[in-house]
Image 1 (cartoon, rainbow, N blue to C red):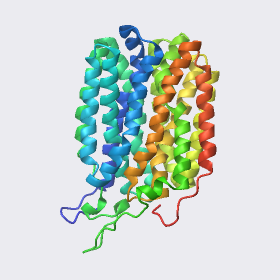
Image 2 (spheres, rainbow, N blue to C red; image 1 turned 180 degrees about the horizontal axis):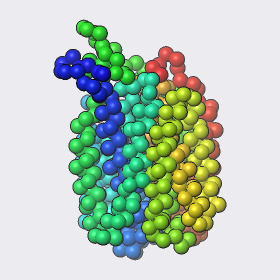
Image 3 (cartoon, rainbow, N blue to C red; image 1 turned 30 degrees about the vertical axis):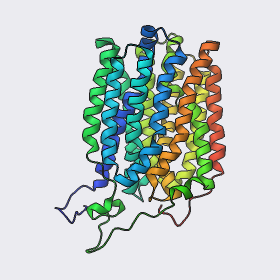
Image 4 (cartoon, rainbow, N blue to C red; image 1 turned 135 degrees about the horizontal axis):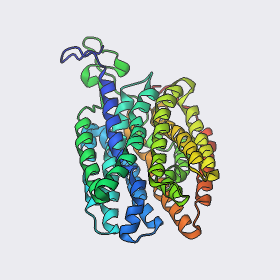
Length: 413
């Protein structure tokens, strides 16, 4: 039980409500964004576009929703996460709805790329940063649950979007997704709080003694963190690994369709990534608290590389399904562990700002990787080179991250 000195006792530690809100935000935000693969064929047909030019829509959005954390993270540290997450979910909904009304591919770039990209960029890093401050002992597990919304969204939303496209067309499908993101995301954002001390609590639900004052979160300044060797190596690892991380979210469905897999089963592959991702976020996030979160991060990079090698060897639905499940597990674990690793290394004083800067590495990888894979396909009519490069990038990321210094013992673990 947690106690709020300004109100009645609460049977639920509010940190878990913050986790639930972050789960809902990542579910509708990323879940809607990761439906993009289901729209690729419709966008190509309606706008007579190449696969590379359509892939650029997702890459632009991905660049912004990871890159904008550079701004939203420090703002969340200063102003609190709630208002940024609320605004971000409204922008996400508007961007999806505007994409449904677009009359050219350029308008899709503006509506989806800017609207969805900035919307998720406003909400993702602040929501994750808020979760980190509410936990110490179970930080990896709590972070895993929060970002498992991405996995569940990847499981549920692409088949839902495919059904909407079949029933009401791709334009109305985007309108429906936009309304869902705005209503659910902005509503749940109201539960997010950044400081346990405002409720008379310490992390993990411990209660402040009478008359006690919550200690200021310890840790490095943003400048100290970003010029440290652990951050530089972590940034390089995430930058290189991200060149391949998001290629499946854009190109797995077209890859399967090119090999004669029916549309419904092809979209199911994205759902299988969601199944694996959800399992990875729950199970591997919890495991990381036991074996060490930095060590777990290395396992995630190597696991994604191994799964991508399976994709490279795949031709039929069965092997593609095996790839999707395994890739989802390690991708989900990577997303769950990374914010907790940042907290371990650099402390909580500026955690949202530091996560936001780190995620610019993921932004550049997301901008380049899926578009480059589409261009390689347009030139060679094959994804083989793109998939192999993606696997090698994740192996190299693991090697770089392995040389990062261990977290300082003086920082909260």
